[in-house]
Amino acid sequence: LGGRPRRDRAVHGGATNPLRMIVVIPSHRCVELAYLTPLIEGGARFIVVDDSEGAITVDHPQFSVYNWNDRRRILGALDPYFPRRTGACRSVGFCMAWRQSDPGEAIVALDDDCRVYRQDFAAAVERTLSDRSRPIAQVPGPHLNILDVYASIEGPLFPLAFPYSARA
Image (cartoon, rainbow, N blue to C red):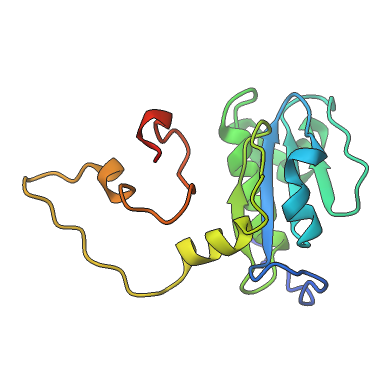
């Protein structure tokens, strides 16, 4: 922030997942490490944005936790522009992740109640974010229903708020 360039870091080693990633977790409750086992074992890094004065602690080398005091220190005069106890803390996490990311490292967000149960989660994210050719969306009417785009998605990887009733 403050016009400083993105930090260049050495390539993160030790990952067994095909995709290196930083996971942003906004929360004011707690973070269950057991929910994230496949990503932890795969070498993902985590940024927890504690949307409180400091209720969350995580004792793990792959996790960084930022609370309101950290936000004030890092954002300075910009801190008031990010309201508290809202989804805005996710945006702060994305900013932190972008500044800490290595070239080619993906940044994804998971809510604190998301359980990653598939060992191939990172590979599924990589397929979804790949630059492979995709068909152009064509619809019979004047508008595109974005939910229709996910009708034939490979595996259970859906965006935030995708209706559970529509998941195959």
